[in-house]
Every structure is written in structure tokens, then in C-alpha cells.
Amino acid sequence: MYNVQQLYNLTQKPFIDKISLQLLQEYYETYLNPFSFCYTVSDGNTIELRFLERNFPHLCGLETVAKKRYSKDSMLKRYRGDQGYNRIKSGEIDFQHLKNLHRKTFLSLKDKLLFFYQIPHIITSPSAIFRYKKVTGSNIQCEILIYDLLHGVCSHIGIEKDSSGLFYIPRTFFIERNSGMKFIKDQDDQLNLIKIEQIEISSGTVIKTIEYNSKNDEREDNKQQN
Image (cartoon, rainbow, N blue to C red; front, top):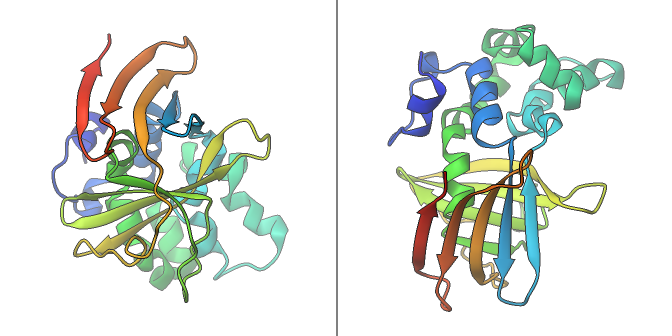
């Protein structure tokens, strides 16, 4: 089984038996949840992205699997939000639990789990960010789509405004194999970045700054602050 640092440093997808739902949660708590990711756009706007604890079960597709077994909301809510998060933390929900609910649906989400390690890399060094235009025939919905091509796949994070309206949260994470560009090729509202800052929420410390040139296709600076 990998630890979180090994997972972060991967250069290819792991085998499913080398990760666990609890490991992915620990990874989320190490590299995503403690930080806000602030994107300064050339039009003067700033997009602040946060990964709340309650977002984690949805990113892993827990409720998608649960819906194959349950229809009542009283059961489904146990697989989403804070309740789902705490049940993962306690060990009540793990890969085997999801397989027992509906094996076929669990396997359909396998890429989401195998490539979860890419999320911190995608959001701090994206190939591009778009205001998302829904793709015909797809059920993917979000306000803004962030993507990158890593390790032979096209990885996407879709984000939307939190109900508070103060920041963005992740709505979806999905993979296109063989670097497929289905969700990218017809998008025409690209946001030109000036910089990305990774900020520790508890202290307000800027952990990382990535600056872009005016064409938004080269990173001018990538500096770590300790």
C-alpha cells in the first residue's frame, strides 16, 4: 500500500490493490483540504477553489454506487457530504463495501479512483481553464473546467460556486483515456491566467505561486515558499 507522499510522486497510475479509500481521504486531507487555490485571471477576476471535507465522497462517486442499491434519500445521504466523509474515516465505507453494493458500478468508477492522485497536480499546473459549455450527449455539468494531460490520460476537474457564493468547490472529476479531448476540443471560452496561488487556509501563508506569461501557454515562474 502506498503512503500519501508516494501517491503524490507517482508518474503512472497505481494498481487498485496499492490504494484504498482511506488512503485517498488522507491524501485529500494532506494536499487539498488545507488549502485554497486562487486563480488570478487577465480580466481582473479571481477564482478561489476550496476542497471541503463534504466534497470528497462525491468526487469518489460514492452516491453513484449507492443509487444502484438504494432509492430512499435516508439511505443515500449516508454516502454523501459530511456523513459519507465520516463513514469513510471510520472505515465503515471502503472499496469492498462499494463492491458489495454494486460491483459493476464500482468498476466503472475505477479510473476516478486510480487517477485521483493527479488532482493536486492538475489544479496547480493546468493546461487550460475554460468556462464550460456542456458537451452534447454528456451528463457532465459544471461552471468551469480545469484540465491537464498527465501520464497518458486527460484529467478534468469541474468546479462551481459554493452555496455561500464566496468560493468555488469541485463538482466532478473524470478521466478520458488515451489523452482524449472530447470535453476540451469545442470549448472556446478559455480563461487567461496571470498566476495561481496555493494558500494555507489556517495561516494565510502562500505555499506556492505559479506565474504565467500573457499568452497563458508558458509558466514563467514556479516558486515554493516554506
